[in-house]
Image 1 (spheres, one colour):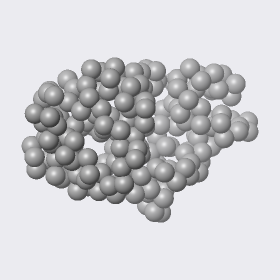
Image 2 (cartoon, helix red, strand yellow):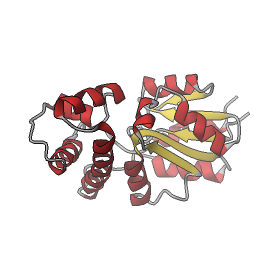
Image 3 (cartoon, rainbow, N blue to C red):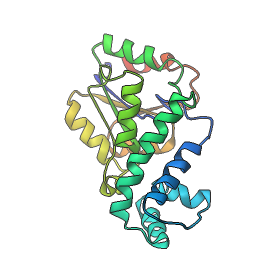
Image 4 (cartoon, rainbow, N blue to C red):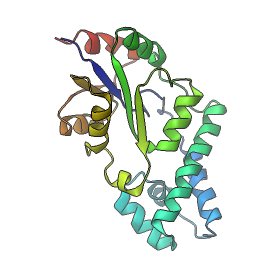
Length: 212
């Protein structure tokens, strides 16, 4: 038996994110705060929360501290993250993981349907897909759009379940780089592959194509 559908995580799986440089993300939040005339100064930890990295509950808490309307501010920070991430990629700050493009091509050649589900904002996911010309690789991809989406980010299986409904072909496997990804897959009732220790993504092809 082989998997008929492979759903991927983005950051750390398809897109390299091992440098830990979040300067682009912090600038996106600072630009958003400026746009909303908020002059408060925040620690990096609180800025990460305003970017949505700490989940929706913490995001709302920090918005209250800052005097920001959560739903309104989310639209701004959502857009600014995409802008700053693309600039960071343009400047060589992020690139595709080693073997990513080759693996996607090989899987497509094997008639395996491909999807992508990310905890990053949908605009950032779209920007990355277009920048690296991956539109033809994926049959379906999505990120976080609304605050409701943020509440249901992985390990909640909600977004993977939507991808399953769109992609339709079973059996499914989810490929990610964290325990959160594995947990999300388990919650969605599908297998998972953790690529954290994989030096080259092409090496997992046999795990997807030749699954016994």
